[in-house]
Image 1 (cartoon, helix red, strand yellow):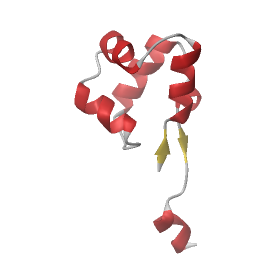
Image 2 (tube, one colour):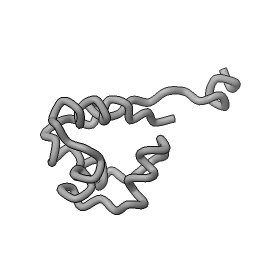
Image 3 (cartoon, one colour):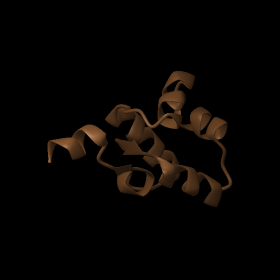
Image 4 (tube, one colour):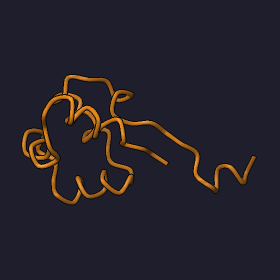
Length: 73
């Protein structure tokens, strides 16, 4: 599962909100909703966010195993 909690922290640090990020990066409302729900988005979207925030992908998201992944082990 992708966790975007780091993204929300960076937005706070930079004094931005989700709407400002959406507008400056060109992300659609549907994509912003996906991010808010922790769903996957395209690399193109991650790239657009990183360009706006001047950061690396690892600065805005982490991967965490979900229950299915843990059950396979």
